[in-house]
Amino acid sequence: MTPSGRGEPHLIEEGEHTMGDRENLAEQLLARQLSRRSVLKAGVAAPIGAAMASLLAQGSRVAAQSAAPDYSGVTLRLWSGVTASTPAMAAAEEWNKLTGGTVQVEVIPFAERSLKFAGLIAGQDPSIDLLYIYSDFAGRFGDRLYENLSDPAYAIDTSVYVPAIIPILSSDGGLRGLPIHSEMLIYVYNKPMFEAAGLDPDNPPTTWDELYAAAPKLTDGSRYPCQLAWQADYGGAGFYLPWLNSIPGAALLSEDRTQVLFGGVEGLTAFKSIEAGMRGGFFDPNLAPDQTDYAIGQNFNDGKTASQISFAELWGYAVGGNPKDFPTTLLPEQVGATILPGITKGTSGSINGFEGFGLNKFGTQKEAALHYLQYLTGPVYQKEMNLAKTLPSSRLDVLKDPEVTAVYPIGTTLAEQGQWNLSRYASPYDWTPPVSDALGKLYRGEINADQAHEQAVKGVSDIVLTYLSS
Image (tube, rainbow, N blue to C red):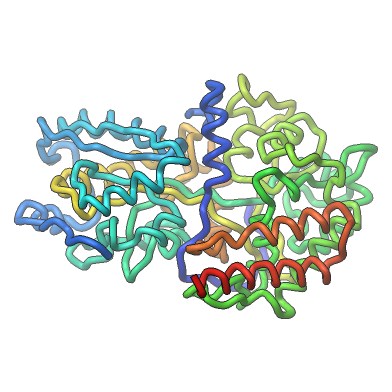
């Protein structure tokens, strides 16, 4: 459902912060044979050439099967993360049938990925054709590694994608990759529990204060209204951002990452709103540091919490998308999903989990690589992916497609959430430890919101100063 009364979205036009925490979790699950998904400025770019110019004239449209180019004998190499590898391999099989070309997908472990990608730059290595990209890599490697897909010659229509994704996968004045999904934090709730609390299960509260006010009626014994991993082992700093990002004009850091911007009233307001939820009994106060978002998702499936702030993946598990690894006691119609509330009426904010692929600027098979990438991110495969409930599409037309919404109703929620600030503030330094520490202390009642704000701002400021002086 789409809540009414929202104001105009405000977007932050810059790269974002790493999804490394969830990647590490995904790799741990993969190692246990537990799929994370239920269906689950160095160098000069290689010349495009006449063949590429012919392809670019097609714009961002992938040729119909009857007119598909013949890439028999062409083998593309693709470096991927864990989550992105599933759709990459599925699309590769279809692309092979369409064109005769082969795509070899290799998952590069998160711990090794940065070094391996940097090695491509150092050696101007053309052997890898397509490269995994997410917010942090877009900002870190930019035009030193990724082809500029904003070049007018490519004629790529970015208006088909969820609006918030494009700036996140852009850096150095250009788009560095095309997105394969639109993962972001949303609000998932138990409709019967909300109805029993006197709330409209189809139109839940749209501000945090309204939700906090319902906490007593949403609480039943040891079951609290919401669980959130404020003191998770991997750090809870990212959970501060939906509150900050919902404040019009607010930002954690400046675009050049040299100034701390949350030291004023906006940053304090976000901490005070979070504190109100903690002290008012909205957030479960009994979660241990080892309670990750996956554990919380299972608790939600078991009816042990009335709501969760989670990625669409966990909504999929709640409605029965992976009964083997994430069993659920809920019927699909009992699971509600909406965009995150704001601190004030008519606002919302979240954080992104976007991923995609870009072209290696040193690659020599860019024509075929681009054709595959446009198939992977095009309407045909994206719709198939969404109908299979693998991942939420990155495309607005797919998310809003009636056939997709019939089986994936939160597509419209993601499309709406994507209109708002989803920034994770990707930086050349790690700003998260002092914010995570402050949130943990606030959660445990060791400090208040003013103290948490002061500690977080000082800690991040010290990190920025150290970076600038190094």
